Structure formats: structure tokens, C-alpha cells
Image 1: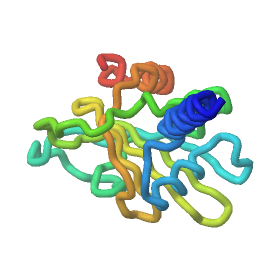
Image 2: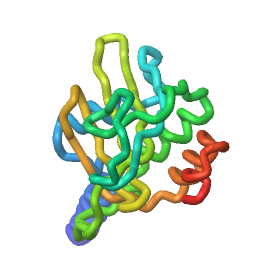
Image 3: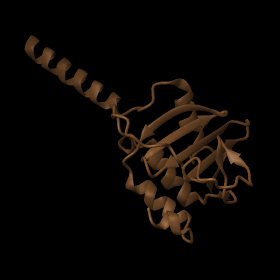
Image 4: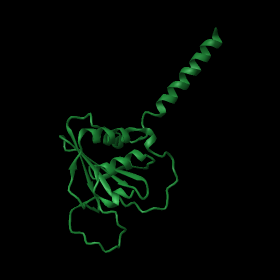
Amino acid sequence: MKKDNIAQLTIFTFLLVLSSCKSSHWKNEDMKRAISITSFKNPNTTCEVLRVDDSYPGEDKTKDGNSLHGYEIISDAVGLNLGSWKKLSSIIKDHDTYFHHSVPIDCLFRPGVAFRFSDKHKNQVDLLVCFACNELRYYLGGKVVGQSYFKSQELRFLVKELFPKDDKIQEL
């Protein structure tokens, strides 16, 4: 009888540990807050997508417009419809979107796309996406709170849907 209890306790502990592994990729509280703001389920949040210049520094491109975290904005912001936002939210929250403990690759972060989430409390999360490096960078209140390499092809497909007339995006 005692062995049965030990076996049950061992199995329960194993299942508890296994299930908690997928709970959150992010360990810092700012990043957890940022992820919660990006949810389409939050009725007080809006989501927009925009293109940012992904050229290499020093390409002598004139910076005529506004910038986002040092990257020139090259398109108007477009609000995401609920379907696209649900897809994006699902990708962001999926544990398998991110590489864990990966070795940094030799690539200069050059985001081509940015998603901006704003809520009624004036919280703002910017998610910048670099497809050259397959890297995501999250900003909350203007500072980087998380970054990771990603492996999600769904994100690439979604961005192509959002920018159907952008040749550079379609070549991704």
C-alpha cells in the first residue's frame, strides 16, 4: 500500500512539473505584463501593425518620418481586425513559438514589422519583428522587457496576409 502511495505521489509530482513547464516562457514580471496587454481578450486594448525600415545602418537612407525605438516608420499604422489579432495573440502566447536557451546568431536586429498594443490605462507594448534573424523584441513603456528568437512560420504567414502589396514582405 505504501508503494502505491509513493508511486501516485511521484506521478502526480511529475505531471505537476511537466504541466508547469508550459505555463510561461517569460520569467520577469514586466514581460508577463506585456504579454497580458497583447491579448485580444482584453476589451480595453487596441492593436495596430506598421512597417518599419529594415535596411542596414549606414545605407544612407534618409530618415524623413517618425521612428519607433530608433527604427524609421515607413507605413501608416493599420488596426488589426479581430481575426488577425486572435492569430497574433495565439502565436505570442504559444510556448513553442520561442526558442529557449538558444545560442545568439550573428545577425544585426533589423525589424521590418512592428505591432503596437495600447490600452485605456496608457500602457503601450511594441513588438518588433526581425525576419532576417527570426527575433522578436518586446518593449513596454519604451524599454526592452523581453526578446527571443522565434520559430513560428505562422507569424510569417500572418504578416504576409497583413501586407499583401508589400513586395519585400511577400518575399519572406
